Length: 501
Ligand code: NAI
Ligand code: MG
Image 1 (tube, rainbow, N blue to C red):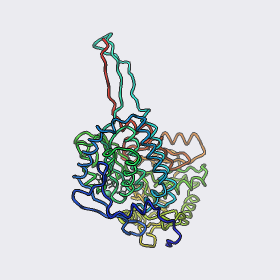
Image 2 (cartoon, rainbow, N blue to C red):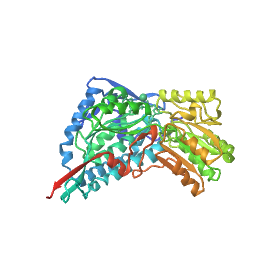
Image 3 (spheres, rainbow, N blue to C red):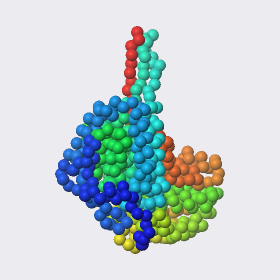
Image 4 (spheres, protein in one colour):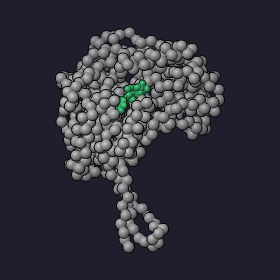
C-alpha cells in the first residue's frame, strides 16, 4: 500500500491533532476527566496512535449534565426562534467551510474512504444542520376546540405549546461519527434543548471538534457537552442519569436493551436506532445492471458497517446465477487500500475487535456450508482490513443469514415466488430497512406494503435525507430521527386551558 502522493493533511486538522490530549468539552471549556484517565484512539488503516483522549466517567457525566441543566435556563432559553436559526445556519456554514478537514479526520479515526467521507458524511451533516436550522421558527402549538361533558356550555380557550424536553443524552456509534453526532445535535438544538453527547470510544475526535465549532457558531457554553468514554462507564452514566430527560441511542440491540432498562429510573424518553439484517430483494424483471450496483453498494458501503447494510440478498431464481457471478466479479475488483487515497473504494474496519468479529462470521459461513465466491480473508497489511466477501447458496438458518455481521459480508439466496420472498425477508428479529428491485409497479408497491421495515427503497439503496424519517420496527428500535418526526421527539407538548366562563 503506497502512501505516495496522498493529499496533505488540512492545516486546521494538523493543528487539532497536535494537541497532547483531547479534553472533554464541559460547560463550554476543555476539561480533564475527574479520574485523570485517558485512552488512545487509533488509525485503523495502520493501527497507529492518532490521539490521546480524556476518558469521561460517571463524575464527568454528572458535571456535564449539571452544565446542561444550567444552560437550559440561561442565555440559550432567551434566544428567539429566529436567533436559534441563525446559530444553526452559522454552524452549517462553518462545517461546510471546514468540510475537507473534518472529512480527513473521519478517515483517520474511522478508516472510511475519503471519497465517502467527502461525498457522503460531510454534505449530509451540513444538510442536516441547514434543514434543522429552518425549524425553530416553525415549531408551534395548536388551538383546540374542547368540550367538557360534565360542564355543558362551558367555554374555554385551549392551546398547546411545544417545549424543549430538556437535557438530551446522545449515545452514538463509530460507523458515522460526525454524521451521527449532527443527526442528534441539529434537531435537539433546533428545539431548544441542551445535550450531553457521548461519542463511541473508537471514534471520539470529530464530535469534540464539532463541539468547539458549535461554540464558535454561537451556541452558548453548557448547551453542548461532549464526554468521550466507554459504554459501561460514561454511556451507562448517561442512560441512568436522573438529570437526563431523553436518551437517543444508536448501536447494538444488545446494548439498546440495557439503555432502555436504565431509562426507567426517571422515565426518560428513549429513541432507539439499533441493528439490522436488511433484505435486498431482486426480481428477475428488474434492471439487473442497476440492481447489481445497488446490491454491491448496499452491502459494501462504509465497509459494510452500516445499520442499514443490505446483508441478505434474495434473487429470483431465473436471475440468480448471473447476478451472483456479477456480484462476485465486482467484489474482486474493489480497490482496497489507504482510505486517504481518493482512488480507494474500501478502507479498513474500525478496529481489530470489529475485524475479528467479522472474520469469525466468515469462518461460520464456511463451516455451515455456504459457497464462498469472493473474499473470505483479511487483506494484507497492518490495518484492520477484511476483503469484500460474497457467500452464495446461503440458507436462512445459517448464522450469516440471521445475525448482524456489520462488515463487508453478504449472504445471497435464491427465491421462487413473491410470497416466499416476503416471508423470508420478514423472518428476522430486525426491521430497519429493505429494498425491492423490479420494473413492475404493482409488485413494487405490494412488496412495500408487505415488508416489515422502517424504510423500503424501490429500485435504489442507501438514500437518506434530513427531511425523511429514519428508524426501525421490531428489534431495530423505535422512534424516528430526522424530518418533522425528530421535532416531535425532541419536544414535549404542553396543554393550556383558559377559563372563559
Ligand atoms: P455498542 O452498541 O456496544 O456501542 C454503541 C455505543 O453505545 C457506543 O457509544 C458505546 O460506548 C455505547 N455503549 C456500550 N455499552 C453501553 C452501555 N452499557 N450503556 C450505555 N452505552 C453503552 O456497539 P459496538 O460494541 O461498538 O459494536 C457491536 C455491534 O453492534 C456491531 O458489530 C454491530 O452489529 C452493532 N452496531 C450497530 C450500529 C448501528 O448503527 N445500528 C452501530 C454500531 C454497532
Ligand atoms: Mg460494545
